[in-house]
Image (cartoon, rainbow, N blue to C red; front, side, top):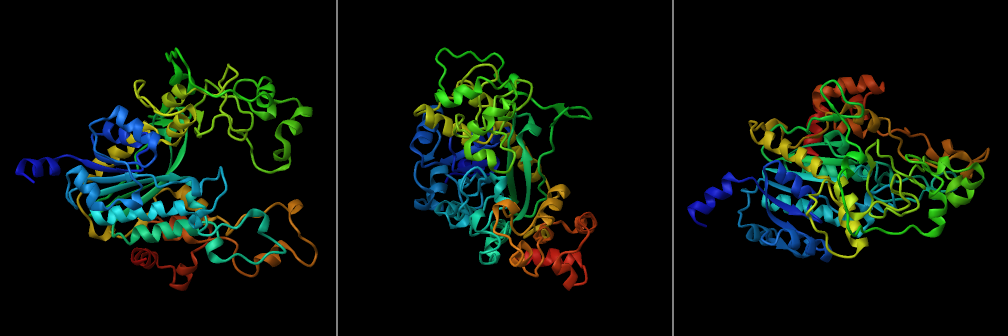
Length: 469
């Protein structure tokens, strides 16, 4: 490598992009001043999209399990330790609350292991990992809801809510990085979509890294802009040949009756049981059933199937799903960004992307952190400064069970008997609390963690124990 190449390597903020997809996160990072040095993607249609829009970008079109870190470094013309950041979202369908959750038993969970492998071997200054927020509550081994409660064996520790995230935290601590995490709403960063994502940022040298400060709020004011709406996103969009699915006649029949901004709850009472079928007797909000969007609010989180019964994304005034181009506008892709493949494949690429506004905000956080001084005391910590999130995690039950009408409770076999004598609430949130916030968290939830009770409530001991994993 020449001296000029080495100077370029050290001065540019080069990024290794993993699981690049349609490059939503990458385009956001570029907007913050970072440079995508190499992209890795195995999906043939996403690969075609990258090549169509970025023909000169080094691209490794293989499964990550078949690619070595030296392969990636060679393609990017970089050396281990000189990479500014590794960024990507390991396959998240495993942890999504929208489908069947198989958690870490699912082969796709190994994508996380390979993400960690690349970080360990390339030693970037920072890493960015994003995922669905459902990862926070996923179990290492998923037990179907219908097999929890009286009549079934007690839960094993690996079947408890949050056990998968403990594995993630322990693994990332083992990298020797300083890590912070939070659940961020893309709407808070100027994205016309209420899309919540779990984000984990890591700093190799213990530089203080912070989540980006929100720029927007639901109603605006106090220094915040108002959330951008679906109407804002679609303004001025003209499509000569719009691409979208057609609703099947059964769905269209009911959607005709739903007003802008409504869903199945606005259907006539006698039609609700027929329209929802078995879902009518289930529990939960079911807000996505027969949903018609509002131009006055941000879009809900985009899915890969806008015509799905449970996650319908119907146009505010027309009897059709959002088009591919409307999807792209909501995700903030440039209008001239071309997606390759069938309409279904295009929906998948756009729906799986990270909104550009969120990616840019994360990139700015990395740039700001790069100006900080290293702090060895931070290395090995894995924490969040979001007390509201910590409070929720501290109040999280070990599992969720069906309501009584759907269980096998009787006088001799109750849900209390099934839970046994142990505490029903987890206290792993205390593993993620910064030392300076430990007392405030204890005050909020009204208790100390089990380890704090064993060790006299010494918050620094808990932090030291968390650092050593």
